Amino acid sequence: MIRKSSNLEMDNQSYTQERPREKSVFRVIYDFLSGFKLATVLLLLLLVLTWLATLEQIDQGLHLTLNKYFSWKSFYLIPEINGKKIPVILPGGYYVCAVLLVNMILGGVVRIRKGPKQIGNLISHFGIIFMLLGGGVAHHFEERGNMAIYPDEVSNVAQDYFEYVIEVAEVKDGRREKYHVVRGEHLKSLKNEMYRTFDFKDVPFSLSVSGYLKNAQTVNALERAPQNGELIADGYYLYERPSEVSAERNMAGAYAQIIFDDGQKSAPFILWGGSFYPFTVRDGERLFTVDIQKRLWLMPFEVKLDKFTADFHPGTSRPAKFISDIRRIENGQEAKVRIEMNEPMRYQGLTFFQASYGPPDAKPGEKMFSVFEVVKNPADKWPEYSIYIVTFGMLVTFLTKLIIHVDTVSSKRKNHESKI
Image (cartoon, rainbow, N blue to C red):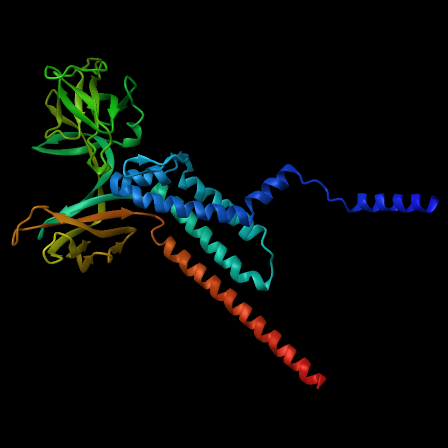
């Protein structure tokens, strides 16, 4: 009995010594975020999100679909295919990529075993991290616009696809000069009765803006009375419309009022993206215009279109190729460049893609213009560089394993020969 009791006590002591310690909360979270299982789930989610977004953009358009699936404002989403909602809630692609970035840093760099054998894996993981960072930079800082130009014309401005701005300019000698611009980021929050007042240097009045709508239509109040108490200005009011499938077709609108330096105020008036003429303000001998339109941004060079060629598949309106032969003019120097589908021009941080042409109903022999999509993306080349890094890392991994394999086989052969 005494011997059995001693053995039992020894077993209990051994069990107590070998029992693993409980992990801290921090360690549990760290293991979860750096785990291979999480990486697998996130990659599968990205595969599903990309597949569903590709299907949905057929009906919803590219811009709306990208905002729904991959915008930082979209925490979750419900897929919709052919007008029917799929009863499943999925996380937004932006946050899936953000968690994947954390997973790659913790699991693929911090937690991974270090040593000569793992150099290739480390390099590949750095490449994937670089790619994810490039996507984030593009999402937050990329600018997109278009430039439409006829042959023999010269242009140095691009028009933003989506951002509407308010421009205040003084008219001198029949031309508008000294533009003052209110960017779209200061207008989007001005819903309903919210307003904001803007002051401009050397302008004898302030501008009060309210009731901003990203897609609006002016309506005659006598033809259709306001349904939601909209402000009527000069017999019209702004009616809010759903965002267009092609978001670049939205017509923004807002209400505005002039406040002169002496305190006098003008009657409220409407600013609308579809207006043909700006609102004019006179102060003594000075004349000003107030207008809302898509933002224009200057290029650091001029573009002259020498020739535009459009070829279509026989018997169809499907484009086979569009080619624009241009001259890039900068500081009096000219450089000939050809821009065509999948072969853009990259210069000074800008990329010119061959986007489309016009007019859409052009007849054979009719003069046509070329439309370039202009993209300013600080991370334009990052995805390409990341692919090089990942490829190099995989090559290093392959060569490392090959060298180890050859060395192992050689050692076994030498041992075998020595025994003989």
